[in-house]
Length: 90
Image 1 (tube, helix red, strand yellow):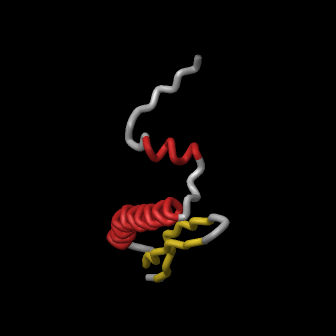
Image 2 (image 1 turned 90 degrees about the vertical axis):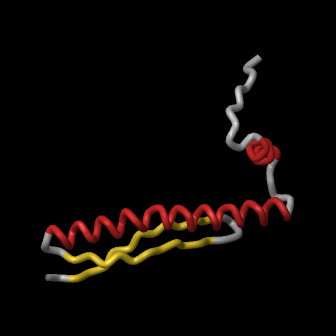
Image 3 (image 1 turned 180 degrees about the vertical axis):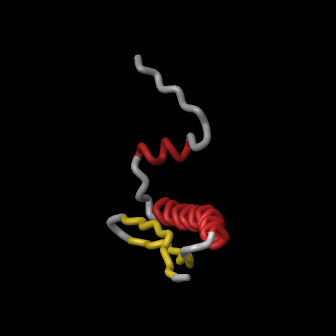
């Protein structure tokens, strides 16, 4: 059986910062059990990666807010987060 690794990654890029989130997943070719183990590892790492990204972005938003770098549109979106906003076309 050959053993390799693949990486699950996401890259955040902004003018002030770049951050790479990465998890290495061992993969073994061959048996069905090995393929299932690889898919199981991938399935468990995707939500972990999402959580790491969410924590990072929340921290960045807090930093931006402290530095007053929110635009008027971003401030409006932040105020209405999680609520349905119906805009008047008139």
